Amino acid sequence: MTVSSAPGKVYLFGEHAVVYGEPAVPCAIERRARVTVEQRSDDRLRVQAEDLSIDGFTVEYGGQHDGRHDVNVPEPLISAAMGYVDGAIEQVHDVTGEDDVGFDVTIESDIPLGAGLGSSAAVVVAAIDAATRELGLTLETDELAERAYRTEHAVQEGQASRADTFCSATGGAVRVEGDDCQPIEAPELPFVIGFDGGAGETGELVAGVRALREEYSFAADTVAAIGDVVRRGETALQAGNLEEVGRLMNFNHGLLSALGVSARDLETMVWAARDAGAYGAKLTGAGGGGCIVALDPTPETETALRFTPGCEDAFRAELAEEGVKRLA
Ligand SMILES: Nc1ncnc2c1ncn2[C@@H]1O[C@H](COP(=O)(O)OP(=O)(O)OP(=O)(O)O)[C@@H](O)[C@H]1O
Ligand SMILES: C[C@@](O)(CCO)CC(=O)[O-]
Ligand SMILES: [Mg+2]
Image (tube, rainbow, N blue to C red; front, side, top):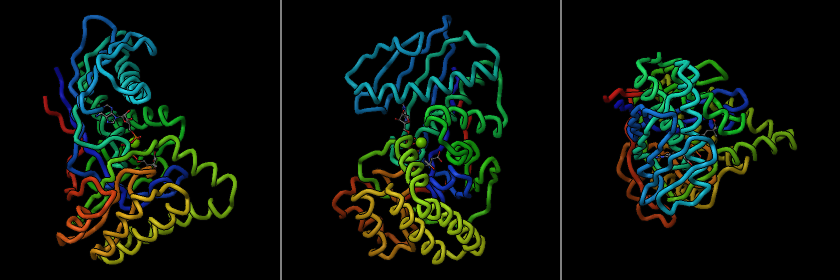
């Protein structure tokens, strides 16, 4: 039995634009997906996802489509989850050369699903790491990140960046631009997260931005403008100037809004955070619903979010210095 965990993330700057080669700065947070893997004596895959709904579900299958599951979880949720786990195991078969081994996989996670905190990347990174180690192979972090990226790329139908998977594998604050991925130094960042209880479909939201970009040159300019905001944001980060970082987060949010990936609850939470005195606030991740991230060293934003209609949960997030953790 082998166990690995990997963290989720927030985007300080640059989601969506990073898919088109602009830089982005995601930061890993201490909310993790933990994946336990045990090799089977046959070639089947059995996946138990404890947190996919209140009840969790188990699905066992030998091929892509003969899934049988125990509890009443909506079919689209199951096929989405199986896409990531399937993809991760495919990478494991590929990198180890052992393509006829089966696994029992258990996923436990405290990252809300589809909410912009990188649950998919964390699950994929932890699953690939645990399953390769179960077969006696420990991947270097860069190789692990690359394999996890290929999985997200396949599930998101060819539209993914390396940002989420690199950040989850490496931990800390990182900078990603195309295939250039680097850890960066960052000052203490007082993250506050607001969660509306909802989710967005990353693949669909990315496809929406792509379509806008193709239809309107000003949408392409908006994506390029996000890149400019990120570059200024990096300078502000290096200088430890949180006021400027916050102002640029606000700008970044406005541009994401223009690209159609915000939502009413996200706007309400962003404004509640700003009114409470946060340095800045923006949606994080793919959008459409889910989470916002604000910077506030005082308790004001968290308190305000708790009383904001549409906000289901508000919490502080610590930077996760460590990416993948090998637990057993
Ligand atoms: N605990 C889990 N168990 C099983 N599958 C999970 C779990 N957490 C996430 N997943 C898979 O990841 C999918 C969510 O990925 P998606 O990329 O849409 O959102 P996210 O990664 O949480 O947010 P974002 O990409 O915006 O940061 C789920 O539909 C599911 O397939
Ligand atoms: C929207 C996006 O930029 C981030 C999702 O967390 C997609 C990606 O980078 O693959
Ligand atoms: Mg994701």
